[in-house]
Length: 272
Image (cartoon, rainbow, N blue to C red; front, side, top):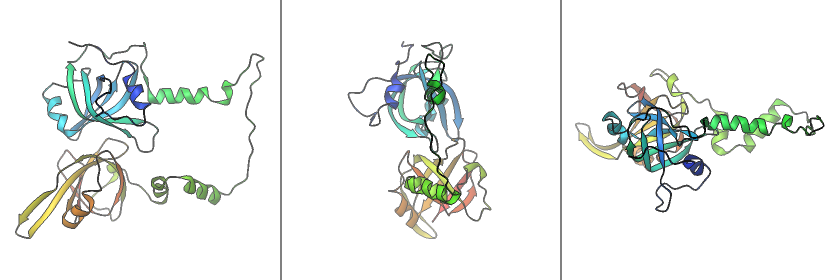
């Protein structure tokens, strides 16, 4: 039974902007599951290769394997199919795991190949300190600081420049108030949420006393990755948005009715 991870596997994936987990010639990736926690009907965890940790989430299709004990906290898994996604508003990424297989059951402790696990946040903080002016100290004890030029600008000029330099999605977030999922309630008149699609159902046709129609669901989470919301779209809305929603992509959503759902979700959003 294999009892070790693939060293530097996570760093190799994160440093490759065109990484494709479906590629037949990619190296095997075995990681340890750390901090396994339920969120709605799925689970989040940290993938550990002994040197680097990255946040990750199992899709709902893998939940039965976790409940049955095939996938365990501190156990080892082989990643077969997954995508690398950005965490909104942050410079870090996370893995969305759609297919994997158990390699070993829970080990006694977290694997640490260097004596100290360095996560992305810690590495970024140290990198920032390494490039600070205070690091440019020569043997004479003189601290070298870059010359700074100050240009007086009004607040409106600064805001206009920030909006002009931002990407379209960033400009949109500057001009509207985005509500976190935990703040939503059925009595809100207007709201906008910024969410990532974590699961997408198939389009289904139905027939009832009111007539015939079609419907599909998507499950959404925000940058906090703490709450899930299920969005249900009927008929014209279903046909309009089914092709637009893609797994792992981020969207701004506004308008629609909010209803309390089962305990897996905070709310259920209905769009017709």
